Length: 348
Image (cartoon, rainbow, N blue to C red; front, side, top):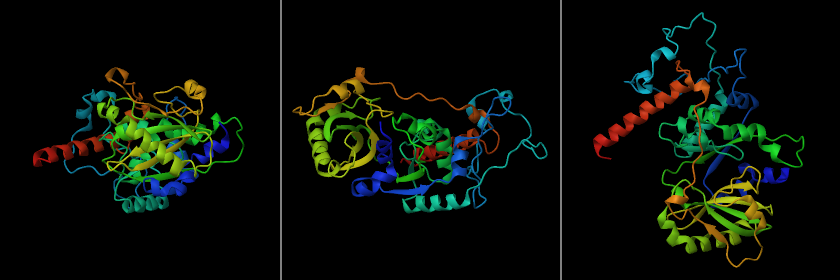
């Protein structure tokens, strides 16, 4: 992979050209101090990194407000309370309680963008969304309604760390030119159906293959629509993507809406860290040009389902003190449980 290929696949690079075909997105350049905060503090002499603290709100309010009647976090964990710090919460004078950081200007800009995008967004860095950190969200999605929720997701994500620290390592012609990192806030649509997302593989300006993007599930209805979907995506590629996108080799992800329009979700480099999903890079490299039909692979049966991404809770989230990442997770879980209970009671 060439560095120029990596640069062209940054969302802030391709979005202006495909805005009409994509999800409404607003961008925020990330300052160096916020990037260092997301990456976390280095381990101390004991070998442990300090617990993560959510940023102080510019308004002085709780970053993730707790409901009026909150349950005991320890009871949710169903764990032995002795495994956690059992002091009385009064750390004044201990010298161990680090002050939470604050990014008032960035927070204000992001909160304004969230409001203008309807109150909920899907965050993404230059290339990756923090979907490997969905475990930290009470509803298991990347829906964010505040600056603090975005910070928590980014800090919890190995994909975010890869974007910020290691993406350029895959380039064969790596240069010393710096990358500018941005936070892309995409309007959140709860009705997007994962079975209607597809990854398309382009080699020398030719669409060679299409794969179901959500390969951890079997969707029987897709099998009857295969030919119709293939033709729809082929036409879209020829009319909208190929004449505009600058690279010869790349992948792009699309979502097919309920009224059979196509929305571009992402562009990624050919090979490198891009997942080939139901293909392998070896067979994609060997594909012959000029084949009569673009190969379209779907999960054909329940036996064809692939395992999903496995993630673990970072060690620093085991700190349950007020303001810690785990404390904020429990607050969100509490809020989500109460919301679901309320919906159930009202028959929604």
